[in-house]
Length: 157
Image (tube, rainbow, N blue to C red; front, side, top):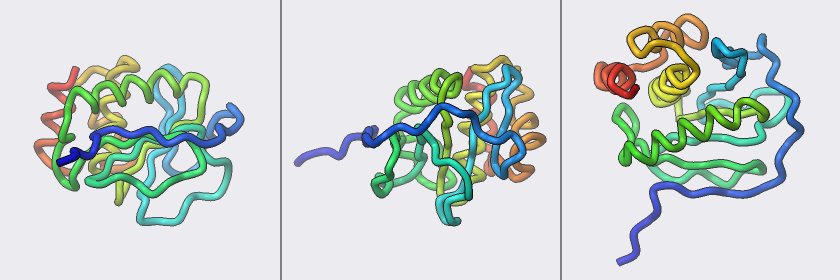
């Protein structure tokens, strides 16, 4: 039996490195000034430039996209299936966000996306105990939906 990989990388042309518009919907500015876009895949692609790289937090692989991407297996309302893989993906997002337009997305754009944004905020210097509040204030008040997602963020650092 062949096991489906937990992480895949799709390749495509990378877009220019102009940053996200900080006033655009779903864009979170980290304390360092790095910009990330969170979104829900159940809604249409927002207007404006495409990401250079996307991290997709889903229970099954995403449909192919015209930009580079990475998939982390993460069932809805749960935690990542492979936490080491998720941590590696969070670090990749943080590194890439210094020079690329990076988006994070799950189906709704709140739970898994918010949890990931909070973990990336920790990498950027936000204390773990404040990361969920930071993302709720600067991204979406409904981000990080479950108690176990909150605990995951607090213990992730």
